[in-house]
Length: 162
Figure 1 (cartoon, rainbow, N blue to C red):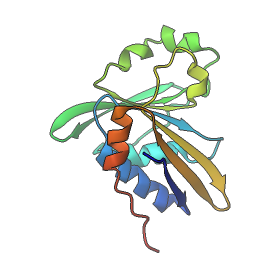
Figure 2 (figure 1 turned 90 degrees about the vertical axis):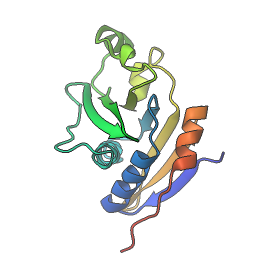
Figure 3 (figure 1 turned 135 degrees about the vertical axis):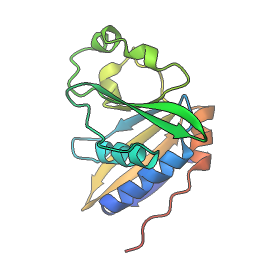
């Protein structure tokens, strides 16, 4: 399957992609988010978690490193755990915090700054690449496993109309 590519001209387009991803989620999915500071990783994740059914604030885990959210997908309760590894000084911190146990095939794990967890971070099913482009963002989603292929195959993204 070819990667999914799109231009996100504004935050509403980012929110629409997050909502589309929420509808395509499967338990056990691991998503890596790559992009510079300000590229929209947290905005995309926030939209995804809210569209998946979380009521309330979606906090950036910049200082806590992880934030769990309980949602219901296809009638089943699932944890979505949002990680931000930007402030991690070594991969051992990831192991010491016990985060590896969260990657259990049931939880959906979304990881910002995954390169900070190399080589101890479990591999992703979907890689999201975000780049600032003009006033918007270029986004590419790559499926890296069968579960990732299933996710991208289910993705139904339609950019919002102005």
